[in-house]
Length: 151
Image (tube, rainbow, N blue to C red; front, side, top):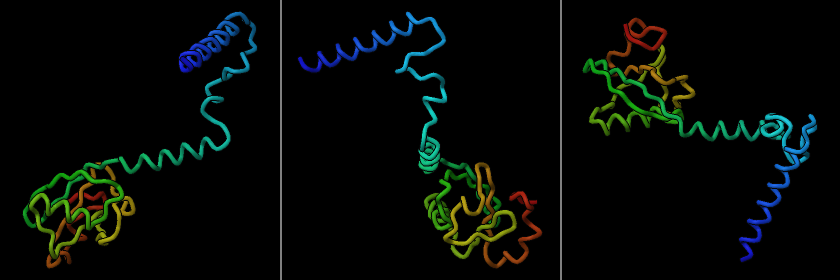
C-alpha cells in the first residue's frame, strides 16, 4: 500500500512539472528541468568521472592481432587485451598448440620484454607480431619493417 502511494506521488509530481512546463510558454525553463544538455552531463567532477569510466572500460577492450611464426611460415590470429603481457601471449600460443620456447617476440624491429604489456609496446588492433627463434634473431632488422609487417 505504501509503495503505491509513493508511486502515485511521484507520478503526480511529474504531472505537475510537465503541466507547468507546458503552461509557461515563455523562454524561462522550469527550475527542476535542465536548461541544456550540458547541464545534464557536465558538472563539477563529471569530467573526472567520465575519464574514470573510460579507463575502466579499457579492460573490456580486445585487440585482434596476428603472430607471424617465422619458422613455420604461418600466421596465427589471436584475440588479446591491452593489459596482456608477452608471457600471456606465450600462454595463448601454447593453448593453440604452438611452442614459443627459446623464441622472441618482435614488433616494429624491437624485441619485446617478457613483462611488457601490449599497451606499453604500442601494439594496437590489427598489429602483426613476429615470433622468431633466438638462433635466427640476429638477422631481424632486415626482416621486419617499421610498420610491424615483414618484408
